Image (cartoon, rainbow, N blue to C red; front, side, top):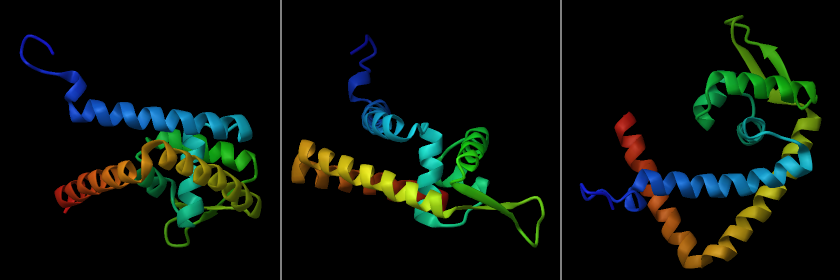
Length: 149
């Protein structure tokens, strides 16, 4: 605690960020080792795999990534032939993005890694810990949604 009585270790944004980063980095090591994916590539693949067709802007909003990170991830996934683009008939500036059959298969495999990691976290935290964390995160998400409305 500093001289003003501020305790960084109890500051909720600091604690949430540290926990999220720890969890994300452990999972990132898994999909990076097996598939050579970066975090933005994983997040783009996951957004498209779980939501279907999206624009790059929608992916950025969905996964809170800057447009340049989304753009680079889209390009990398397209290079792997996991993603395809199609023009929006009403607005030629907008491209719809979707996974190719190879991308759907890759998403399924990486989703399997995610399920295994989720089970590992559940074992580590225990049923009560997961339930408490889920309730807390739901409260944060509700608060965020009410601020946006």
